[in-house]
Length: 198
Length: 145
Image (cartoon, rainbow over all chains, first blue to last red; front, side, top):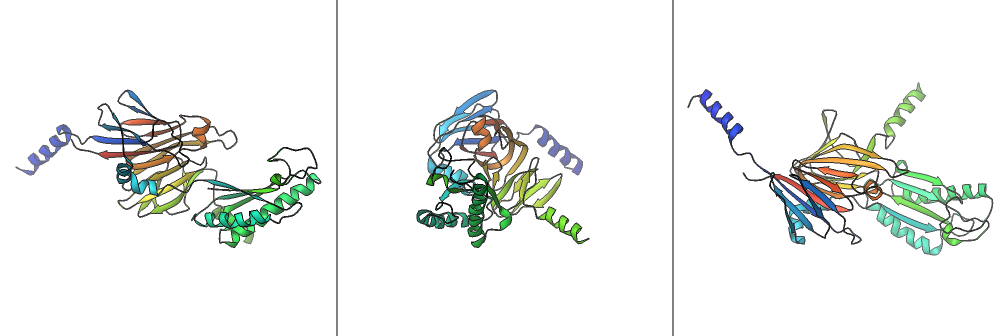
């Protein structure tokens, strides 16, 4: 076969030979809290609702999808390294303060160590630290105190090596009471800092 | 002059820009980001934008956290395009369209889907997945004939 003929044969094979067909697998997974979501798969003019743990749709080319259920080992085999590299879940922590100060309560001091250990696991965390107060005292003083509480916590985060540029700080004063109260109510659950990380 | 340089440095130093819709949080192996027709090697901490594509090598995986707290991970030998992403952090309204051209993808949906079930869609060569909540995985391969 001359090169021209060979070329023509290859072209024919490309044009008329059987195309490799696309195989697709979609599987619904239970979330960390056990909640099962729903995914609606539209394929070749049909809709398939997957809403049970490990419910799976499998399709080849434009043929109808098959609905099955994969076992956990099958999922690990198919998706192991992909699932392993989901980023850490965004998380939120609350720490509480001694009245009128930026000193953590003894309980929250212990909790802080756990929070720091958790944050250290994340290679590039984005953190928001939001300080709050209860309704005791002047509002302006509470704005300052809430910012001071947040800054103090930021100091701990920088202390374990998190770059300051990755930490946003805000003081909300008494504007977002966790437990709604009248003015001048000493409510320990309102004297807090929220640490949100993702 | 010093101030101009300082201002310039500040621009480069800022961690996130308005166009940034997500960030690569974890990565292994070879991963590239394709943006405006150019290919960059990806690295942990790198921002992801609308219209970016992520391309992983045979040993590559990348996990991305989006501004609405959606989490995506792209497995080895995959191509994922972020076709459209919009998120209003006040109302949580938004729209998220991504295309898995090949390979594998795991998804944990975020605030966009919580606010509007179905507002996230994953497109594959032969299907569209409407996401109404939480976690799932997709694989696309070229099978037999």
